Length: 375
Image 1: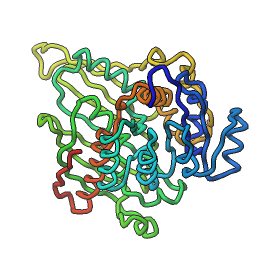
Image 2 (image 1 turned 90 degrees about the horizontal axis):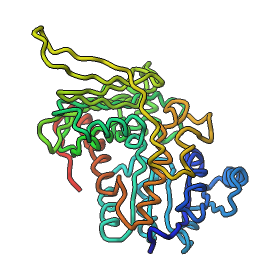
Image 3 (image 1 turned 180 degrees about the vertical axis):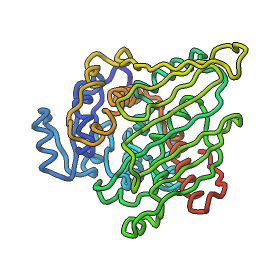
Image 4 (image 1 turned 90 degrees about the vertical axis):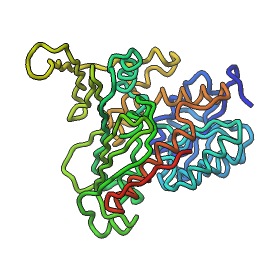
């Protein structure tokens, strides 16, 4: 059992991209101790030396056997997420996991049931719902500035040639949540059905890995609020387009649009009253989304700007995920200490992830409608 006044011990499992989270947990006032874990002993020991961390382990099994470890943050290969998350929850420990939550509906249902039947906290660590841009748009929407929503879209375009083998040939929209989650979080909607088409042709060596022929997929979702449709495109290979991880959303009073290139400023559109001409006047303004360090404990505020490994592709291509990492850590740690569900709990993670699994199924069925189950 934990309480708001009790510090927790967290194990960080996976120290490639996971390295970025180590100093945030180290400095979070709600964390008593950080334990490092990676099967690569040399990497684990180097990270421990770099940050002055005394306690290391080399297997998830050792982490799960340690009674004093309260929570586990999994930053491991995508194919391991479901099995490892289930193991963490079955061991009675709180679980944070990078995206996607799972690759099969039955695994998503198991994760949801484990959270539902226990007092444990699960959180899918979706960076896109804690970026500066998302938080900026959320505040405007909370003020009613967008008016009645009309349309939304998301995109995640990224050439993944040369990434680890488990990414090669991966079905694009099974890795949907960076592109879809901001729109769903802003609208409060859940995807109910989808039509999706694949595009392009993967080389045979990539196609055979997951029996997936498509380097790109585009889906149209309907939501449980029947007045809104959402378009999402995800690409991983065979397309000459620089990295972008984007969302855009439009209402009858205001619209927000992601820039064409990372590093450019997003656009904010505002609709004026009719002036007697054809169409109403619409202004366009480049905006700088503020860094929301006010939402964080003072000790981890620097990590919205500061990161560990400047050579990691997640930062070269993603700009440090929009300053999201300390927000994710703070929400997870706080949810555990307060014995509550996280902002991206198992049910929400399952709905967001399942939308992508259903979209790929539709693409493999030549765009046939696929109903997205609820959790």
